[in-house]
Image (cartoon, rainbow, N blue to C red; front, side, top):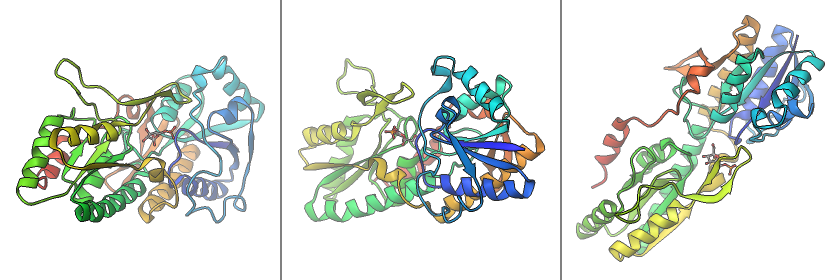
Amino acid sequence: MKVAVLTGGGDCPGLNAVIRAIVRRASEHGFEMMGLRDGWKGLLDDNHFRLTRETTSGILHRGGTILGTSRVNPFKVENGLERVKRAIERNGIHAVIAIGGEGTLSAATRMAQEGVRIVGVPKTIDNDLNGTDFTFGFDTAVMIATEAVDRLHSTAESHKRVIVCEVMGRHVGWIATYAGIAGGADVILVPEIPADLEAVAQHLQRRNAGGRTFSIVVVAEGTRIKLSADQNEQLVTTGALDEAGRPRLGGVGNIVASEIERRTGFETRVSVLGHIQRGGAPTAHDRVLATRFGVHACDMVARGEFGRMAALRGNEIVSENLAEATRELKRVPKEFFEVAQVFFG
Ligand code: F6P
C-alpha cells in the first residue's frame, strides 16, 4: 500500500521528527512511503520522492522539513482538486498524511469531504488548532521567546528602558502568554484582548514611580490596537499577502513602543523575534510529541481512520475529527491572563 506524506504551511521544529516516525512505523505496516514536495504542490505538480528508513535517518533533531513546504491551497488553484485527485490515482496512492496547521488541515478537511483518504497531523508554533491540547513546534517557539525575554531583561535594566518584544502567533496569544509568564514580563498584549495603550502607559508609570525603572512588554503580532478615540481596534499588517492570500502580520511592536514612549517619556526599544522562533532544533518535548503523533497517524491509516487527525488530550494521543478541529481557532482562555496579571505589579 502506498502512502504519501506532505508538510504544509509555515515550517516548525519537529516536522522532521514526525516524518521519521511515520516512515519507521510505516515499514512495520508494510506501507511504501512517498514524500510530497512543498505541501499540496507536491500533488498539484506531481513532485515527489521515495521515503525510506535510510533517507529519513539522522533527521530527528533537525529543524525545518526535508519535504519542503508552501502555503499553496489546492482549492485556490485552478482545477486544484481535480489535479490532486488525478495525481493520487496516477501514482496509486492509498492515503495522504497531511502535516499542517490551520490552513493545511482546513484544505485536508475539504479533501476528506471530497472522498480523499486523509489523515492529519497538527503542527504549528501558534498552538491555535482546536482538537489538540498542544501542537508540536509550540514548545520550541516558547523556549526561544522566553530566552529572548530573559536576555532583554538584563539590557533593559542596565539602561532603565522599556523594551517591547514582538512575538509570533498569528491571531492567538499562546506564544506571548507562555513566554510572557515564563520570562516574567510586566505587560503581555494578546489578540484575545484589544490593547488599551493608555492603561499600559499608566501601568508602566506606576511601576517606575515604585522604583522599578525598567519594564518588559511582550506583544503578540496579532494584537489589535486602537490609536485614537474615534478608531476601532486594528490589526497591524505589513501590507503584503502570503501565498495563501492572507495578510502578513507584523509591526505592532513598533507602534506599541512609540506609543509608550510618547505617553510616558520613557526611553523605549523594540525587538521583533520573527522567524527565529520557527528555526533550529526542536525541544525534547516537541520531538517526543511529534514522534507520538507520527506513529499514531500511521496507525490511523492502517485502521482506515480517515478525515481525522492525531491529537493530544491530556497525555494521551487520540484521533479527532478534522472538521471539528478546524472549525474555529483555539484561543487562550481568560484564566491564563488572570495568572499573568498577578505579576504585573
Ligand atoms: O503560523 C506560523 C507563523 O509563524 C505565524 O506565527 C506567522 O504569522 C506566520 O507564520 C509567518 O508566516 P511567513 O513565514 O509566511 O512569514
